[in-house]
Length: 447
Ligand code: UGA
Image (cartoon, rainbow, N blue to C red):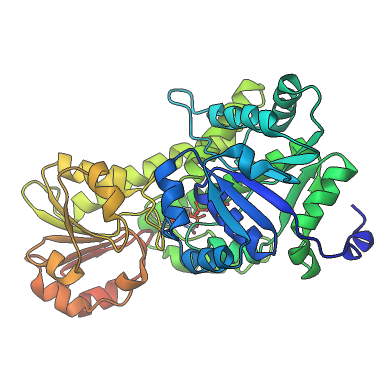
């Protein structure tokens, strides 16, 4: 797309419909309305829509509720269960429904995307760009176009791929100040609409990468798989550090200062989790297998990550002299990372049940995880305060690096414990600090 031309496009408010009010759909809808567009978010879930209409945000994402209220009040953002209502006059329709891993084979389950396409086809009136925000395998956008064309041979539309790169907990910042916006579109008309949508970002010089459909689809998987690779790589190096007496933080720092490597996503820990890396690495591996172009690095990254979680269980057991049965263990953090209530694929879901299975009595403190975590982690005692939770326990595990766990009075914690041992799986403390505070045993990751 000729960039000189783009800067000349005038301001224009578009009418946009967003299908699916999950993480990506809701954040995109709220942020696009903040750009000045007229946005209608659609979801089948009536309770969710009723809550959103009442200004209640169903997920925990810093800043989202205020932004939502502001744009609702400005009359730019609305919520409905009726797709036709949202799509009336819309120039762009974003499909942002879930693509979970299909049970059994790890492929992305596209049934929600295809069902949404059928409904979009039925509701199309006048030209619109059907934009896929959900992470979908290569080829899906073309299939989507086929589905719509078959259902409505008369429809005037284009498809576009517009993958999302936002991180939970930093979603608004990531949407408003992205490293780049990726747009896969193949007609001038579709490119023009997409450019208008992201005009506020373009004017502030955030890079807009325009590609064909397949490239845009693959950029998303390749980016997530690469980030997951960095994490698995440093986690393997961490295990080696422990064996040779090196400190993984120093190694990561020394590596990351090389501009070609970069320091981000080189934090060793209990393994990556969340709704994206586990699902997308699995899907990429499956795509490769299906097309006989095996993605061996990604396959290994998945296996390494599974092993890392199990290694944490072993470390906890070793700290307790091999026996956790009958012991009280306090775990700080259950969500897959801080600033989210999301428990999906969290390392806690592997580590905690293993400890309980081995006979430990596990108490957990998490600022946001309890609501989701209670049903996922049966047998756990949930507490609110790290100090009272740690009292009388024989091992304290830091599993998620919430800010509230970063500056604990370790001396006070150690005094309350039956046997003060610290498993610092996010490396937020160090051996000396822990020992000075009275801990008799300390273990981090790769130190
Ligand atoms: C990730 C990507 O970072 C986003 O760019 C992408 O848009 C998103 O997936 C998605 O596909 O929708 P997210 O899953 O929210 O975002 O979280 P991250 O901050 O990337 O963290 C993922 C996991 O990796 C967490 O469990 C985190 O603890 C772990 N991690 C991250 C590490 O163990 N070490 C690191 O150095 C960084």
